[in-house]
Every structure is written in structure tokens, then in C-alpha cells.
Image (cartoon, rainbow, N blue to C red; front, side, top):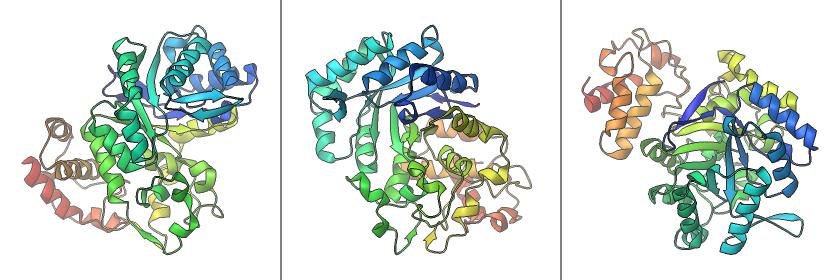
Length: 383
């Protein structure tokens, strides 16, 4: 297992592969504990808890007894339980009650990430950030009851607005190749509407890329939901592309997006957890999402670096994907931030070493003008 830093969270490091909570709902106490124990044995240390289901919370408390300090919990603020079902709430009293119930059932006095739950519309964003919910989150963070403030969303416009407030440390966002081609929408169901895919699409939606780059520049960490599109991305008959990805291609795609630190997977069994952990033992070909993206006829990713690494190996050792990432971040910002400059400086080889052999451009499945990109990088960074 590999780990990435939540950069605004006191050097807190999370596993690149982490767990959503869907697969734990409905499990017995022992089944739940056995799944979590096995995940932790494999190096998973991060779990999302969007559900307010009391049984789920009780089972989590039982399963983390004596090992609370070994797991990073992401608990949602604004997720309540009423009349036997989960509900989203913005009511301050209900929000506070649900959060305190979570602490009690987990038998803990803190949650690592307090995630403002499911904000997709501009009206809801305004309600949250101009009302009592954000004040409550700030107070929890000041008291150390949460270590970071997060927000979950499917809408890049709302997510960008949230990041720009400066309050958000962690963003939980839906990321996969299909969603990335779609324009922003306040209705999450539109992301999977077949009508939106029937005529084909071209490249990543610029507002989504702007969001990822904004998070990277501002040290806001993205943990990914919907990496497999609820499983549809893995099935050619259900995928909006009409082709299937495997789990490792979906994970690799997400982990190569700017800002992303972890992929939340909704595993329902120990076998599924073990399969995902084999991502680190899989071959380069098994993880190569470009093999799917570059061969689709109706859906075109062209001219933009997808950070797939297909340009490697560079004849002089330049990490072309990373250079392109830092160039894109600087262009989007309109200046070279010190953090980006430092990342670039620490690369073993730099764009100025490019000998223009062209091997990278021949290897690139997306037609990126790599040599031009290296010249841009040299002009931006000076070497």
C-alpha cells in the first residue's frame, strides 16, 4: 500500500486505496469487523462514513476498539437518521445531534475529517456557507473534535466555490473518465444520463480540470467517490462509453488526476478488498487506462496530457507527465507558485534537458505536442 499526505492536515497520511461505507451496511458485527481487519492488514487506513445508519456506526465502534489511532475516519456533517432511514439535513439541531450520536456510537472523541455532506446546488452551497453549518464545522475544528473540514459534491462549480472559501481542507468528489467529460450539473443523475453520451463527447470538461488544478495549487486533498461509477464503468453493457474498464484502470486514472490523494471503493466482501489491494501487484498494462480511452470512436481525449505516462521512457529521463502537470498548474494560476516551483525543482530531470528526439510524441496515444510542452516548461521555470 502507498500513502499520500492530506497536506492541510498536520502531515496526516491516507492510503491511496480506501473504503467507502456502502459495502459494510447490513453486515453483522463480526462480518464488519473481519472486513475492516483484513483491509487494515493490507494497509488501508482511511474509511468514509457518509451513512448515519445507527447499526453501521455501532459496528464501526466495535471494530475499531483499541485501534482508533490506526485508522482515519471521515464522518459526514449533515447526514441524519430519521424514521429508519438516512436523510440529508441542514437543520442545525439535527446536524449537531447526528454528529454527536456518531461520536458516541464510535466511542471516540474526535473525527479526522468532518465532511459537509452532499452539496450539489448553488442554493445549498449558499445555505451552508452563509448559515450555521459552516460555523458549526469551524467550531468543531477549533476544539479539535474534527481535524479537518471537508465537503462532498458531484458538481465542479459548487466544489470550486467551496474550495475558494478557504475553509475546505478535503474535497470528496466524483471522478471517473465518463463523469470528467460531462459539464457541471446540479442534478447528479444527469452524469449518467444516456442522452448526454449518445452523440459522443470531446476531452475533459474544462471546469472539472480547473477544479482539480485548483485543489492541487491550494493543497486541498481530493478523495474520490464513484471511481467505478457504481460498477457501471466495469461493464461494457452499462458503461456510457460502451466499453469496460477494469478496476485497476479506474484507480490509476483517478490517482493521476491533480489533487487526488485517495480512491474510496465500496467493497462488499473481503475478496473484493483483496482484489483492489492487488492493484500494486498488477502490470503496467493492467493499469493502463489509455488503452481504453485512446481507442474509443465516439469519445475523444485528444491534444491534452492525460498524465497516463505512455510517453515514457524519455531518452534523457524526464518525467514528462509530471512536467506537464506543473506547466498546466502554472498556466491555470497565471503565475508560478512557490510550491509548484519546488515540485518542479525536485524532479530528477527537467524540461530544458529535452533533446527533441520525438519518442514521447510517437508513444503518446492522445496526440500531445510534447516537445512544445517541454519548451513551454523551460520558459516558465527557466530550466
